[in-house]
Image (tube, rainbow, N blue to C red; front, side, top):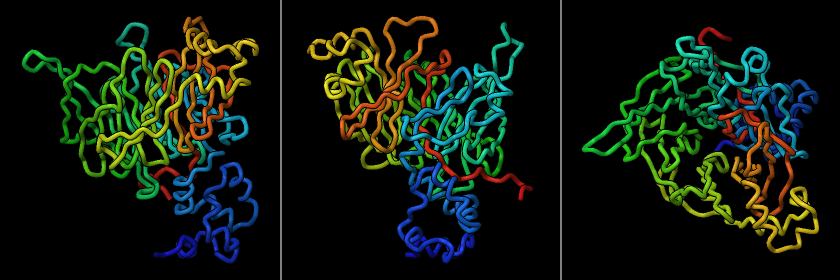
Length: 415
C-alpha cells in the first residue's frame, strides 16, 4: 500500500525534503489543532502550500479531527455561534461568516446540518402571502467556516426544510449532496400513516432530483426531524424512529431507536469517530449512550456508556456548587432536589466521548439562558463550559462541529 508520505510527494503540493520526515511518516500534521496548523503556515512556502492547498492533506485533517478543534454549533440571536471548552478553542473567527451575520437576521436562519466541517443553513426571506411576512426558507446556504467558501442553493418548492448534508472527504473531497426529506400524511384502512420521499441535490450536477425510494411508516409524524450523516448514510430523527437514506446507493428505510422514548426522556442522535451513529438518551436519573453495531443501517444498537446523574454530581462537587451552596452537596438528597429544579438534556456527543449537557430551570422565565456542561464519559470528569447560552426560540438544534480544511467543490467555470 502506498504510504501517506509518498502520496504527498506524488501530489506535488509540498516537496518532502521541506517537511520533516517524521511529520509525514507518522501523519502528525493533520492531527494538530486548527489553530496550530494556521500558525505553521508561516514555517515555509512548502508548509503553506501543504496546509492551505493540498486536498489530500485537507481530507486527512478532516478524518482525524483534533479534540482541540471540536465543539458544537447553534443559532443564537447574533447568528451562527460556536462553543467549545475554555481550554480548547475551536479557532473559528467571530462572526463565523459575515454574510450570515450582516445580511440575514437570526430569526431568518435555520441551522440544518453540520457534516465534516461543512455547515448547511436555511435562509428565509419574507413571504408576504401570509400574515406577518412569515419567512419562507427557500434558500439553502452551504459554507465552510474555515475556508470562508460558500454556495447559495435554491431549495425545493416546499416550505418546510428537513435537509441532510452528506459529505465524505475520504471518498469525495470535492462533492457534497443535500437530501430533502419530504413527508405526506395518508390514511390506509383507517390507520394514519406517513409517506416519506427524498429530493436529492448533487454539487456535481447542481440540480434537484427525486429519488424513486419511498418509506411508509405506521405513524403520523409531526416534528421537524434533524439529520446527521454517519458511515455514508443520512439519518433523520423522527422522535419515535429514524428514517435513513443512502445517497450513494439510493436506498432508504427506517429503524427504531435503542429504547422506546417516553414523556420523561430526551434523546439526541449524533456521530462517533466520524462514521458510527450514536443515540444519547437521558431519563429521569441517568444518561445512556448507544452506538450502531454491525453496519450503518443495521438497526442493531449497543450500549457504550451509562452514567447516573447522582454519580455526575458526587464526582464533580465543584461544578455543581454553582447551583447551590457547597455545604448542601454533602446531602444525599441534593441530587434529587437538583433534578427537581433543573432540567438536563443532551446537546451533542463528539467523537472524543465528550457529552455536552444543557441545564436550565424547569420553571422557564423570559430571556432565560441555558447553562452548558461537558461530561467526559470515560473518566467521569465534568467541565463547566458556559454560564448561559441563549438559543433562538424554537431553534434549539445543536450540532457537533469539527474544523475541516476541505474546501467546497468548485463550480463549473471556476479555476
